[in-house]
Image (spheres, rainbow, N blue to C red):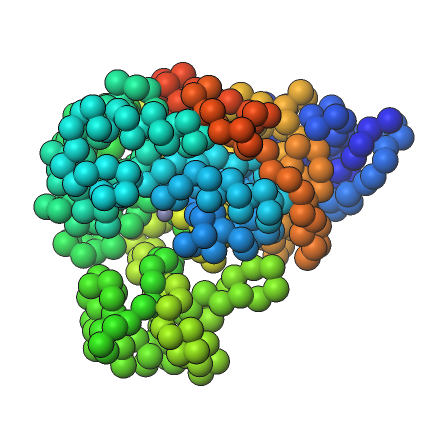
Length: 472
Ligand SMILES: [Zn+2]
């Protein structure tokens, strides 16, 4: 007796090289069988006619903390076919775990803490202070740390944080930029230089190729060259056109200086009035709650909601040109490995969890094969996180599955650890599975799954190194 059989779908799996019409059976939270026809009795059935049956997405860049709508993020991820997610940059692991416990949808959740000067560390920390801060965030359950442009580290402090992360074998993520370089191609150049060949997770490479310093095409070419020159870097990019920032204004001006610059780039005054006009026109969007999720909205109703919130809302602007986004997702080196190893979203609570829809559109246009889509959205990120039983539909793997309508490219059903957590418009709440390291001591992590970043693909290259040879 199986727990669940997913019938008549087109099963696509990079790791086992499968692409065929088959039934898939789930038992005890694992994939039990993939066969032409499964007639054994089962407790439940999902009909997958007209659908792809894919490994659940492993998204290594989401936001699930309070500041980025983490309460809605779990439902949004389940709706997007994501079954494992890494929060990339909460100020506090406890915040992410508390929201996951309250709003969870059965997904496997891990986090990385964004180091903030004055909160976790002094602005110019000593090695001893950095080590002590690392011990604290690891004890709280994070996999490691993130260096973020908006934290305003000097390049010297960023380099010291990176070296300490390497010494201690913890996850190191970087949103490029410091006090002396921006979140752009210059920031990526500087990051590659200070990392000095060491491993790191480079967040959203596409966002450094927005055409702010050159053309998007040239910046994408340079980003690829930089990544090829530093093969221990794990890079992801996302497929959404919109970014995610904040719409807060003060004294008639956006509080974040970059928002004013972006408005000017879009042909609007870099002021609160300019932002109002951009929201009204539809160039800018405000993420607003709609039931259990957040959606980007423009027009008069969005302006009213933004004003009612005293301008304190998120903000989405169409800043990511296709001219860099598309080449970055398909670019491969001479050995056949992807230069940008994974597709992520920078989504979660930010409404841009578009990997399935946009990724399958790229498949339709021939920029990726179906198996390559699975490789970049599930298999490689699972290896990078050190999870051998995820990112594949091979028998014995964790039963993390996304069933996707082939015509509409929308997720129909999401199965996490053998449980249906989303089905045809309805999210089914469920306690998450927390993922942490062996160094976590927080009591709520007693039954969490453990991974060791130093032994994961982030440090060893597993999931990237063999991409070329294993790609079908
Ligand atoms: Zn992010």
